[in-house]
Structures are given as structure tokens and as C-alpha cells.
Image 1 (tube, one colour):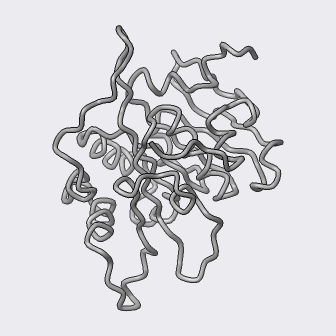
Image 2 (image 1 turned 90 degrees about the vertical axis):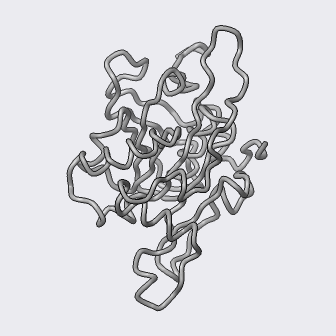
Length: 236
């Protein structure tokens, strides 16, 4: 593998709206991989993190580490939180409503997105990078959807309509993942030994530089390695 390997900077994800799903067994590793992949494509991605049940201990993620601008950071609490009488903040409630039924709650309104947002300047002849929203821990809301690709397709279409390209992370690859353009498995047991981990391509478009079965060390993927080492570039 050479320094010119097009897989290393995920340029296939920048060329046109392509939807990736990353999955694996370690949530903290997954979310840092997701953030690193998103930062490769968009310098300041939106970050939507679906939280676990109250009392569930989790290691700090991109939001807690200060890597995401406050106006691009969103948390959704435990789905069953309402049964305890807790009242969700309006933005969180709107986002959850969007996830439950994308046709009823426009994501642009749920996330309070500006009507238009100037695209970052691109070199002459190059296309402007897409706006990316990284949605972490989608396995925590999978009970909202039937086990079919169509369920995920509705969410993807709604994000794209709002001018956002969604990237997803999940602990489980399911039939819903088939709706994505790319599916990557993160093979790493935890944050302490991520340097021995790899990113395995399970699905990719035929014209992609990534091929099914590609197994690339995480240490060879610059923005992902930076996130995993805790040295992600500070937010713009």
C-alpha cells in the first residue's frame, strides 16, 4: 500500500454523496472511527449521538472531548426515558420524532439548520465537500424500524433532502445496513489496543477504490488514527 492509495483519505466518499455504515464490537472505538471518517470528508461535521440508558457508563466521545462545535452537537437520550417522566429538550424531542418518522419531522427543522449554508471554498475544478452528519449508536434506535433496508432508506433520503450526507455507526450490521453504499467493519477490541485493529470493507460500489474484503490497518488511515489516539484536530 502506497502513500497515494486512494482508500486512505476516503476520497470516494467526497466525490459524490455516499453513505457509509461502520460497525464493530467496541462502541468507543466505533465512534472515534466514525468521527475520523467524517472529518476526512467534512472539516466540521454535525454529530448526533444516541445515548444509552441512565447509569450506563461510557468513555468520552467526540462531543465530550470538545471536537465538535456546540451548534453542531446533538444528543438523544435513552428511548425509554419518557417512561420515567423525564422531559426531553425541544431539539432532542424533535430529532427523536424525526427518527421515528422522517416524513413527519423535517430534519432541517429538528436540527435548526440554517436555510442555506455557504459551502467551503474548493480548489479550482474541484467539487465542494458535502455537509456530513455523523449519527452514532444507531443500534440503540433499531427497534423503531422493521428489519429491512427500506427503513434506513427513508432516513437517508430525509437527510439528503436537507443537504446532509449521513454517516452511521452501529454495534450490529443488519439487513438495514444494505441501504448504505459502504459497509465497514471495525476490528478492534478496545481503545487500548486500537493500533492492532483494522478496517474491513464488507460492501462498496463497483467503481470504488475500496473492494469487498479489503483489510486496512487503522494506523494507515490518518484522520481515524488521529481520533483514536486522542489527537484529533481541534474543532474549527
